[in-house]
Amino acid sequence: MENPVTSGPREIELEPGKTYSWCRCGQSKTQPLCDEVSHKTTGFEPRRFSVSTKRKVWLCMCKQTKSAPYCDGTHNTLRK
Image (cartoon, rainbow, N blue to C red; front, side, top):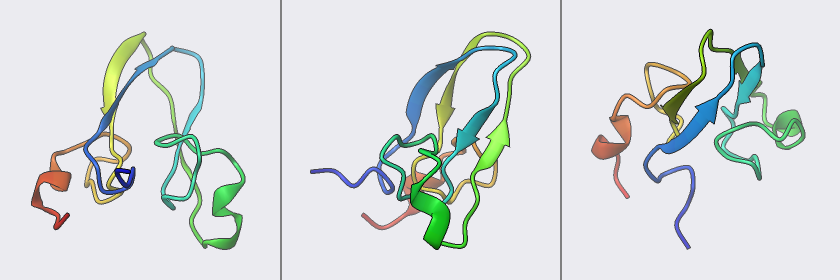
């Protein structure tokens, strides 16, 4: 099975007016979004964000992006 943290980005459609929580710890069962439980013992907090218009985005799964929560292609440089 592919490790969700080291795989490429995940496409998600986001709705305006809603706050999303991007998982930063890599432990969430609802990757790439935070399940609001898994990070409690990791020292990481989710990254909260929202959008102003309905749109599809690619969210980072490798957790190394410089454009969190959005994928910037960093996963292509990581060792698998």
